[in-house]
Image (tube, rainbow, N blue to C red; front, side, top):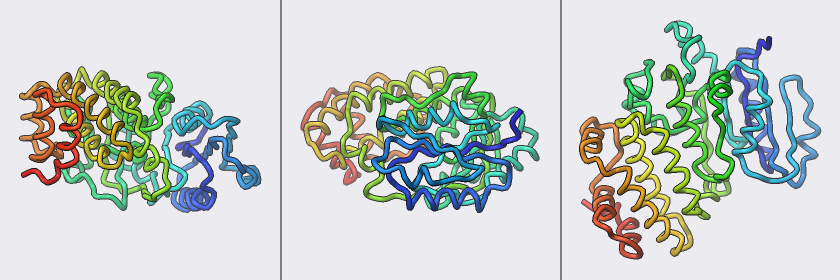
Length: 326
């Protein structure tokens, strides 16, 4: 049996200077037995990767580029650790994840909690979660868990991932991480949320996330959103909260889509989705009254217009202008 506590899984493409920083941060902070699995997505030059030789490192070279979802899935198959943690190659570990394991041990949930979550150090914390932490729960007992938006700040019990056959959807190039996070939260027997800020997120113009937003495929985006709604069907409060959040995030993305026709197509698809999955005013009202949802008058105007049947250029104009609504 492996004594590895954490398997760090890193999808990689052409970011060697950032990868060096990422690896150094893991080695500097992690105090429990670990392994690092780097999965290269067919970078043009892999000489630097192939030259890496360390007992804590495994490098997997793919022959064809297929995106970070498949890279993470290959890492899952290779991993031997009790817990998995996903890190993007241009990000860094901010603190020792063993602190989260220590909290789980003190609270008596180290053997039962399937997800152990922390926070991003350099992004605004979800105050409702932070004030409540540390706490344990499930989606049914704690819909506030839907306020966990970063899949990279959690440790996932590998046994759960394998038993529930949870994987990143490889057909998606954007939003696959949110769907994986949602499915993991739904499958977990118990989730522990701690106060530890363990992850450093680097936002830069050339990142995969920024590139994906500009070339959004409305069909693929809706595949992701339908997956989220289906996963959360047994948890009405959590579903309403996540769907409100997802709608708001997608309305923000519309501003960044460079092709107007593609943005209008996304607006129309979102309208159909919102009409189906955000039709329960009672659930929405409960979410808004709880203070858990990020929502404002501009968002509500767009949702009302979608429900009223607005489509095309008019809906796109309203979606882009929603921030000025009062």
